[in-house]
Length: 618
Image (tube, rainbow, N blue to C red; front, side, top):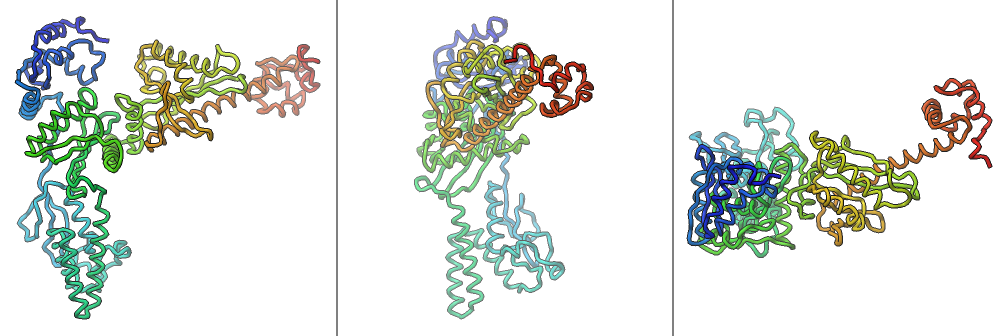
């Protein structure tokens, strides 16, 4: 633990911060080169700034690094906290301090290109060239362009392969897209050019006017063709209308009450945080963005607040911003966003219903993007993130240890410890414990011994940083409230920051809930977390049982052979090592027994005669 009075610079900064007024304002942290490294706002400058230069124990790693680099600070007093927020946003945008959340606005312009060739194609383009092609746009969203091109090609069956027409007509078999009805396949040599040109023209109308306009025009043309008895053409138009309607149904997201909103959710994992934004308009998703943040200052509510301020400095503000958790100073942010938009803006945190489902979808996408960026599996990232939220942890539990006790009526008492890292088993870190101080059936006492030994091992090996030298973020005990209550005093007495919970089973021995010591946390509404906890509980039970069976088998073998006169534990061990089973030992000849290391003829003859030791004779 670092205390401010151990560092002369921190003591000096602390003394200066205690002289600040209890007024709203903006504070500016500078390093020894006078560079601005952090800008923040405060309702009361003295209270907020002095927190940085006191005990560092409660700070995140990023805050500690920032504080270490502060040489001096300055401040600007404002009349209200809202004015401080507006000034803070302006200064951050102007100076881009190192330790503030800084979002890179890499949105350029994007176009939809209809190529200039005998058989035109529909593709994405990042700029409009002077090449005779038709360009639709510009669009600010690459997602919108990509989605529109994909829809147009599928609906109107425009080729997406690399063949060039008319050069490659009749030179090869059509690809899979033709077989599944997604391509007109001019490569077959049977497609009339006017039919292809008609499809391109209709695709342009769709891209320019949207689904409803295209459906109306195509319906009118279909009816005209039917009246003129051009049934083949009418059938082709009918199929396109159905394809358009089918795509429309896929695009619909159940958003009965809100037509326009942004949804913001974040996922944390090893090495960073990903914030995902879904943008809805007209009841459908029209854009999405992801932002990777290496580290965050403070807790999640502060992170969300910082992100919202920075994001809407670059983007238009919708009437509603839906987020996945608590936001610092949400009232002030609503006022700030409303003024920027010119109309009222509401920040909401849904707890149930369709809005909550959309937030969860957004969060899962954030976890998937983070996992891909960091080379991990999206499902496990989402599960660990969800478990951390469910248990109320400050960050996702990347390193989880789980324990289970196993015995037979109090005999051969053992325990198993398994480890999950980033949602996956880390078998190299598994450990087994033979209970030494507890006799008989006492699972609570056995668990107390195991956890005590584990924490003592940490103190001995903490400089190594691996195995017992690594501290778990979370301990899960295979048991309910009783186990948690028995172990919690040991964890608290150690002073180590380890979260402790139990895993509760139902009458069918299936995972049902998490025991938090006096209460239970249901897992039924958290599918990813439920799957992860169930997997951990099954794995720790399997590992503990396997060790118990091995230990019990050895004790039975030893007790059987060591009853023979002249056979002790050492000779029994060598006999089993040589013959593999007890029955093989008894079936061996005296000569064969004598060949075993440590054996003599008298001991071999005692085995064949079944001569027991005096204390075992009846």
